[in-house]
Image 1 (cartoon, rainbow, N blue to C red):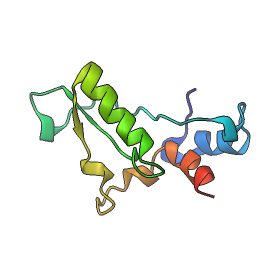
Image 2 (cartoon, helix red, strand yellow):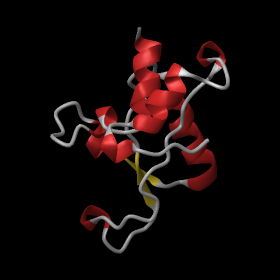
Image 3 (cartoon, one colour):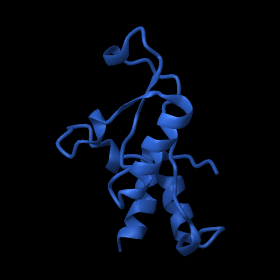
Image 4 (cartoon, rainbow, N blue to C red):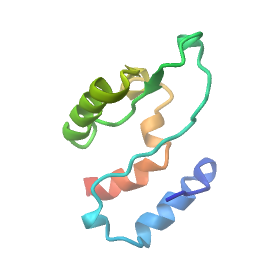
Length: 106
């Protein structure tokens, strides 16, 4: 599924979580893949990395699955810099997956 309007207030994901095509109670996870191909100074010259944000916020399961799948299949550097609650960017709360997380947290 694709959504739009993230920069204007997470409009697409807000709409979907209010009017889901598939029941949210039966939704296993929302995996938000964002900023593919974005270059980062912290990883200059090494494209084999991804930032993981939020995999441990609602349960430890997704975090453990991500770590195990990465180790078995792709062996990327998993960077948790932006997952830190003290990170001033607060990306976890500013991306489309957050509307799903709010519903689950209720």
